Image (tube, rainbow, N blue to C red; front, top):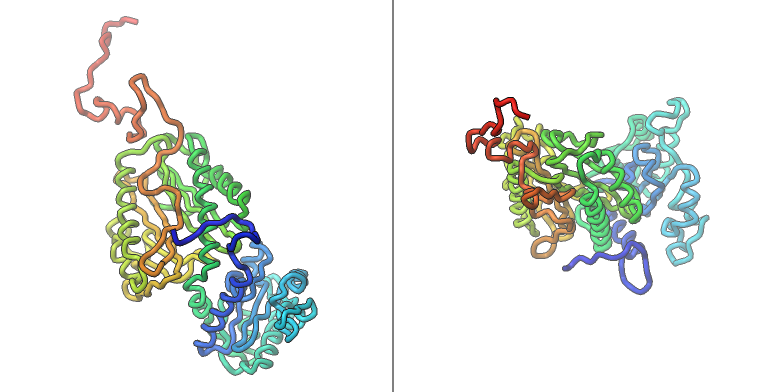
Length: 466
């Protein structure tokens, strides 16, 4: 066991996550990637990139607002312009944003942070502000002033995501805006030791959620109730954000709809779940398939096929292997009922996991065979496999998160998945335990129902006797 799991608290008697080291190492990686690029600076509106750069966070409610922004000039230090009083919070509680000489020497101050790395500022709130209010123009002037002060205004400015009025305003200031997302994602491609610890901790919390879910599943439970249960478990354990719980059951399993409903679970249903949450910013993407009370042979066979594809992929994960080496082991879209790889996208799939759930590298037959990416020590990614059952309505889904080590990989998703688990009450018949490998329609489990023997009429049939 190379990767440790700790408690969620910070303590003085055990070396766990070092937040200062986490911040410093992330920023150093981003600066190195910026230096290797042709960009003069990076401008971020994406909260994952902003957190990686500045170690600031104001709640997941802001994720889709595009109202915060942060700048890293080549050779300079990060500046974050934040929503209202959040900037004041950063000045009070984020001393690493004081870039004055006093702050660098170990005497950070609120005034120093306000003058250098933590300032009040807003974007256009996805167009909600009146276009004539001049918000985009003011943003562009603030950013341009910093670019000029750092001597990089004539170099391209790399942006991750932005609104059209912001881009237009920056160009009106004479700034050449280009794609900067690749620089961010290259910096985040491999994880530091603290990031790996946080990702492992996030997975351990999902282990616990699956245990509760396994004990909860039974006929009459609804998919949305499963979502509520998992969310409560995770928040009770200290989750920062439950991004989603994909709860899919019964005939909804094939094709996979990627969204939960209020469907009631029934005896013999397959049910698969994807649990996505964040612990200190670091995410999970973690599928498991369970059967409710029993499973049919078709379901078991689909699960076994799904597991074979997973195991063959994990077996070749090591440094210097490529994403193409993985995806060539997986079936073509046409082999499991889809016309092409676009139609089957994300069913046989892999993706980096970090401050967001889809990072580099990406594993898909859609792109990886023609554009392979090498695997590197320190990468953390999820591998996902799927297989529809021969019954035409059920399916299996498995996902494992792995950390690439010096000579292979370690799986950090630990809830049992080597065989299909059956959840719910154990049933007893007059002759003993009811077999959990059975068809959900009772008559298909009897000799007569299967057609093994001609059905025999009841002894009193046709006699009119009570």
